[in-house]
Length: 313
Ligand code: SF4
Ligand code: SF4
Image (cartoon, rainbow, N blue to C red):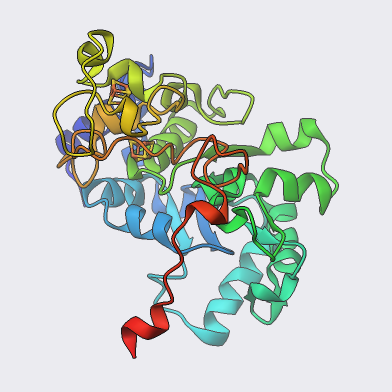
């Protein structure tokens, strides 16, 4: 359990720039565990990267368990088989949970993702209908991402579109219930910061047209990049790893709205894509792996196909 001082320290960083009184945040520590909001994590057609990122979050993961009850997560559940299935039956029956959902849902070849013997579409519909709030974790859940890349045969569908086209929710209902946190993967601070925001204020955060919290997704990567001066001076790198701004070797920081990468970096603040001299590949952008016009590296022709069976045999 975190002590008060440590709790407030983490909370103040997560709520930076927001006018939430300290007393309001401090009060969260006194809410009995049984009365905290319940969170259940659902995985569909995904690579588990968002879960891996979230579960590696150290202090932030511990912080989250101080303010909510995580009742289900497929990768860390002690329960398995029938017991785990029963937990989800209870989630659906009780209703009102915060559902964090990772991955897209296949609507063309529905059998490519199954949950408890049901199609992901069938099972997710029940979960979403009973949810209090739905947080789409990552680009696959928000926009389709890699699972919906050109050439995908599964009919990978992001959650807001799934709710509209399969569950027949109207725009008002989707706007009321859905928060999107795009990124491949989602950053732990985006998840925990959003949940803290909701629990501390009792309100859904202000969001943009894609339903992503403005405080995390309004600024461009380019706005806070340490190499911005080199961009303005037109000092561009010729190859990734070279000195200079990475614009001419494909950095997508000029079109990608995401504040967390240059501000908190990744892996506990160790580094991030641009300072690692790779450039931003636009992983939170709605066109990430979804466009076929060549503006992003999305056509199957752009990707060198490697037959891994020869490598492992
Ligand atoms: S490296 Fe990318 S984000 Fe940074 S200044 Fe250049 S184009 Fe912008
Ligand atoms: S810098 Fe760009 S590619 Fe890297 S994690 Fe952030 S949004 Fe994604």
